[in-house]
Length: 444
Image (cartoon, rainbow, N blue to C red; front, side, top):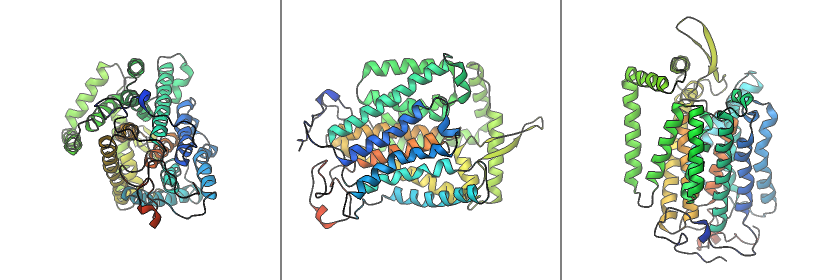
């Protein structure tokens, strides 16, 4: 068993990881959690190299990607002789309710109502978030550091491919919009992972490539995504307290409130921004789509269309011409398709997950386990970027983004809780403390 180093970074900065000082395991079998995490990481890798955006706009065969993670977990469970699973967190319980609601509705819309565009790309991969419940051990510190390094290289590859596309080296790929707003969490994830792992040279390269990306496609969403990344890194710093998180949440809420109350000023600022960066201003089109979505919500405010309706809507321009596009706002999508029940469950899951992960991050950071804290920190950056991007883009309803989000959620939750038994299975034998990575019984 690997001894736990109380100061594995070799410094007094517990919020960052120095890969050179992570203890090595020598020759020992890997944990089941680590092996399954590697399979789960294939999903964001597939989303990264999906140059032609097949995972978002392809046929039903794309949903087979979910099996990449499901089959290894099933194979693992078949070797066990115990029915034990981990406990659901409060966030998991809310997500399970949303999953059942959305999966039933989207399945009805696809099979019975023959709806062409449903929320199936969102709710089918949502089941990946619960895979970690079936795995009874957790990765060791060294294995967690490997997972974090793998995530760094996956997201760094995304930034590189985005630069290749956005500067026009492959002009034919620009129409797929794979490396644009909706996937911006990969960019912030790469920058955050390089920062957390103290790979300063790689951080400089990724930052330079992102400048290239911004020049090629100067979206306002990317600016907000970078602000979300900076804010998340700030509230998860080495000396961060709960007050930072509450303060940032309050500031963000006030900014949203002011933007809504002073809508004319917000639209004017957006117009000035687009003019300054010489980019077409699509705000009017987005407002038309949001208005159409809110109109659908008002017609059925409690449960919307039960997630059985189409995810595109018809809006009208000032000239009178019509166009049909996604809502370009996932919160409007949840209002229109799920009503107050759908949006309520969605927002509650976000809040509970954010709170739980912040607490786990602080616990791992304060107990000298930087690899676990670092992995959670990077995921929080990607998670918060998605939350911001979802207000202006069809983000969560893209299969590649949803599959990536929920696969990484399972990876992060596999790490477990700080200073608690490494498995949360409900069983009397687990009341004794166990070392990190220690298997449960002889079956794992």
